[in-house]
Amino acid sequence: MTLGHTVPEIDRVSVDADVMASFTTESEFTSVAVSLMVETAGYSCIAAGTLGEKTYWDRDLAAVGGAVVRQYKLLDAFLDQVCKHRDETAMIMARLIYETTVNIRFFLDSFSKSLVDSYVEHSLRHERKTRDKIQTNIAARSGVILPIEDRMLNSIGRAERAAGISLDDVDIRDKRPWGGKNLFEKAKAVGLSDAYSAFFGGTSHNVHGNWHDIYTNHLNWDETANSFTPKMAWRRPRPQMVTSLALVVAETLNIYFEFIGGDEVSGHFAPKLDDLQRRVFALVDGHEAYLARKKWPAV
Image (cartoon, rainbow, N blue to C red; front, side, top):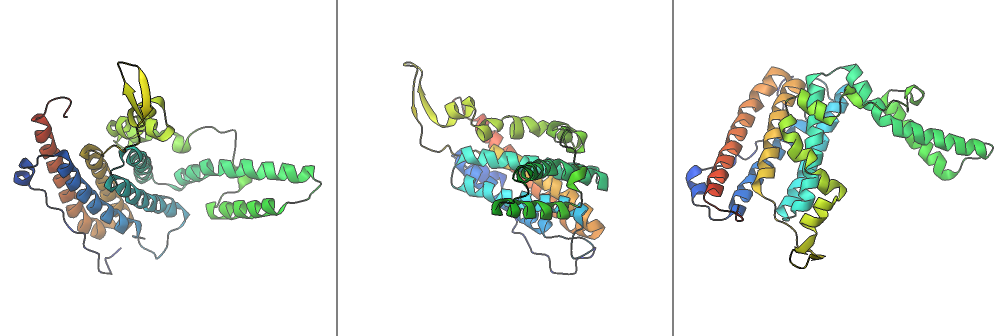
């Protein structure tokens, strides 16, 4: 692939150690982190629109490219919630971004038609179950099809054709995860297991509304009286989640550009993404130096 069109320039965010040394609030670090994530999302947007050798994707490439498109949209939603100072819902977006990024990395690490088949078949289990249930209901009415069933069958048929796999070949008894690995195993296989606990394990509370999420984010607890009242205020996001996610995404985009565009595209974006990661690490160092001057509970 050649860079036949003008590649959009992404604004480079400056990270200055001397400036950070003068910061007096954590929100100043968060502001820089958000700017760096905006820069990261800009590269994600370009990656999402990079088709490769042809002007379209076949189904196998579409599985990977579509995941990159999803990643970009989730980054946009994540930034929206962070900028609205809504840490509770930003954490939910962070988990979805992490899972999508792990999937992208797993695709890139072991890309093959059989892997994509596994991914698609896993998704089609729901369509197979739904189709079978509708067909059972129709048979019970001696072949009478309700309008809603007709619409649903048409939608399922379209999904089946796009998938390139017959629903009759989908084994709904197969409970294995796609690719033969669960998310943690996929993360471990591609070197992202260290981030698993923070971005998947910990954020499960936020996604599912577990007691820890309710107690931490949505209730005020009076320890003396052992009583609870509603907490309506939103919690402000901290920079750690933003910077950690930016590093994971930037590294993945570096790999994706090489996969989808070859040496020329990779040669254009790799230095920019490497520079971006260095500046994110510089912000992390500056923030850690700031926290070192604080004492609990200020940290």
